Length: 181
Image 1 (tube, one colour):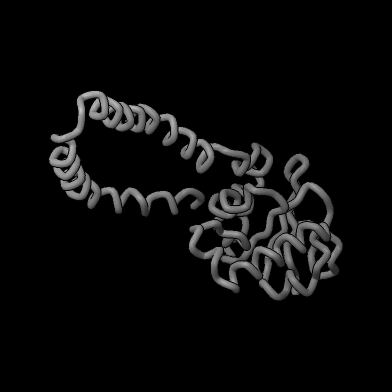
Image 2: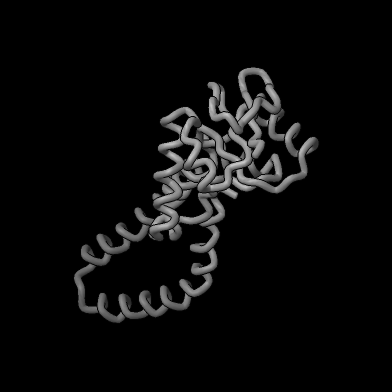
């Protein structure tokens, strides 16, 4: 599910208060000899950080979870139709950023899962993303790459021409192609 990778830092936050309390005690000991205006500057820095935190958090949440990766109404209807009419667990490729949500609604596996940022460092994941980009840039006509990743469905607003993919369902401008091998 997109955005789940942001839960891991929340688990790390449990260990932060004891460390911060040691830091505060250390700063209190060090600032006893500092002049009052320096203490005000240090306190002002911490207050500014506390005031900025809600804004920074809101921006991160907007970038993470409220973005262009949400499917439109036709895509949602097509995903619901696919979930109701085909129980086969297979990989789905969508030519836009809503692939993870479409696959979740349809009960399928996305070619680009976007589960975490850590996966982007593995060679296999980078190759999968590069191949996905190649398939999308070729308008779904890269038969060898579609077979390499065992893609069972292609969702697009344009057409797909490989011989083993047939139009399976159409919802508004969204076309759902199924692989027949």
